[in-house]
Amino acid sequence: MRLPVIKQIQRTSTVAEIETAIKVLENISEAATLKDEELNVIGELISNLCGAQEVHQLIGGGMTEKDAGNTFMKKVLSSIDNR
Image 1 (cartoon, rainbow, N blue to C red):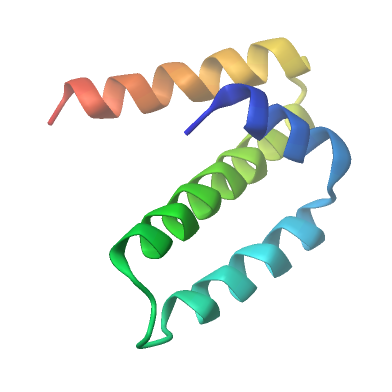
Image 2 (cartoon, one colour):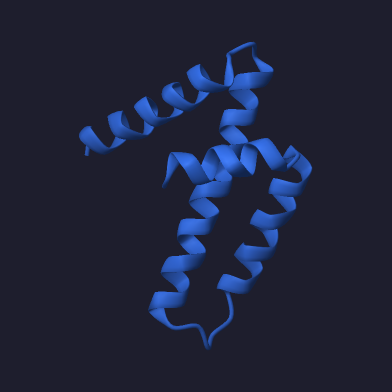
C-alpha cells in the first residue's frame, strides 16, 4: 500500500469507478494461468484501490484529504503492529 498512489486514485476516480476496478481485478486474479508475481501485483493494486475507497469515505464524513490519508495510514500501521 502506498499513500501517494491511494491519494492519486482517490482524487481522480469516483467510488463507483474504484468499485468497478476492484471487481475487474478480482475476476482477473481468478485466472488459472497467472503467475505468483502477477497475482502479487494485482493484490497490491486491489489494496491501493480499497485504500482509496476508504479515504473517499473518510472525506465524505467530513475529514480533510490530508487528515483522511493520515487516519487511514495510522489504521493500516496499527493493524500491522497488532499481528
